[in-house]
Image 1 (cartoon, rainbow, N blue to C red):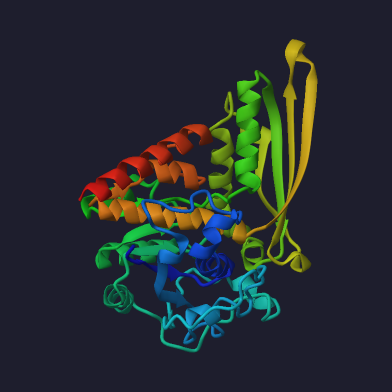
Image 2 (tube, one colour; image 1 turned 30 degrees about the vertical axis):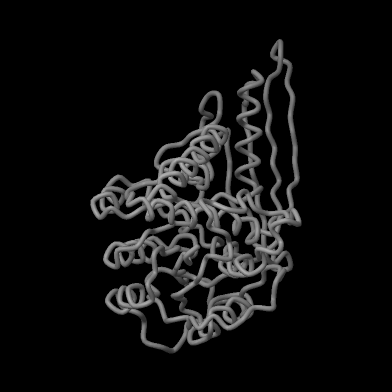
Length: 372
């Protein structure tokens, strides 16, 4: 298969896991039942067929370095499961800061926070040129939570460069009708918003909430409390940056509840930054409901996951679905992929429905691509 050429804005922990995975999932491992992927192939495209051809960041420890080296620089702190990477030839370019760096992060140790590079910021013109010159087909947005202006900036760059867009963070672009129409009018695919983990807090909370509804248990109240020690959790100590994140995670749960909970009876969101946890996220989940005869019950769960690898396999499927759309000259919102892979898609479906829709999307586009 030809390579899927991607660009990435934000070379943090999630990007580190994604790039490690591209090299880890070799064709030789395909027959050895190595865990971690929902699909080994999508229309013939394998993880190793993904190539990072452009990269943008603002940290001095990453800008100017080969992206395969930059992913191991501080403040990245995720588990390294595949360190032996070749030089990619793709140099991390200085991006545009905008609201991508919260001012409170300057109060923390350099190994834990962003250190802005002393370099001229990228402009829309320079970034669009880089996307075009590199042959980028799809741009992935990994800006920090709360980076409203920066996320929209990179969405605009994708539109001007004529490339697909995957919005992995909770700024509402795919789920905003005005933005969705821009991508539809440009006939460019977009997947979003806010990536779900492979088996994380939100997908687990959604699954249990759906189970309550299907089994006739009335969900009265619930909370999801999350702690972690990566830059994402540090960034979210600024409560002003949390509005879209809390809405995204809360609506993901509300969407599958049998009856919508009053706001006071549901709490979903980041709870605290604990540095020694690094990229490990711990979720504390509680659900209270009523069984047959109105008899009360409750469920408590503790989930511990390495946050960034938990999303990387999902990102690999998002990339391949976006590539399928490009191969079939299909633009606008990829409804199935957005519903299955994202917390805040334009249209919410149960995960069972979204799974079936995504499998149908892959099967139909694969056949269409093969027939050409």
